[in-house]
Image 1 (cartoon, rainbow, N blue to C red):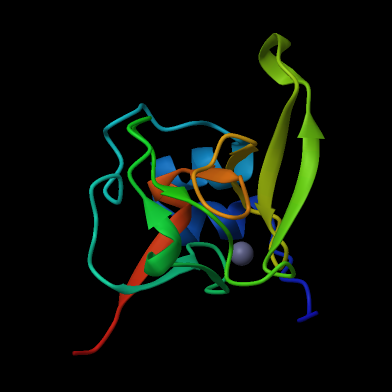
Image 2 (cartoon, rainbow, N blue to C red):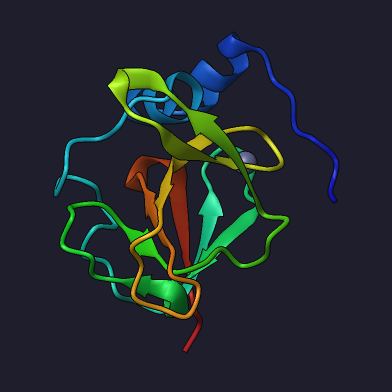
Length: 133
Ligand SMILES: [Zn+2]
């Protein structure tokens, strides 16, 4: 696994815009259907907004109709970390960047693909690197 990225809250604030900071460092959730990648279908690689680590491929993205970018699987098992999140009176599985601990979203067991998983991810935690044609 690659080396961890550690920054102070002030450094994150300087690097990220307010929405990106709220989502990745304070575990906020962007409002549904507002994220820049909800209806983004260009081929490419989605990287972590915090540290640039590759997280998801556009091939794994599907339209779950939930209002957030949804993926069947990350680029690799090592790219993301998961943690049980019992906030807001629900038990969900939180998805984090394994390198900088950015909050990405949650994973649900109702995906359409072979994994059966739906990674429901905030656009604000991602940075699409479009594939060069
Ligand atoms: Zn990261």
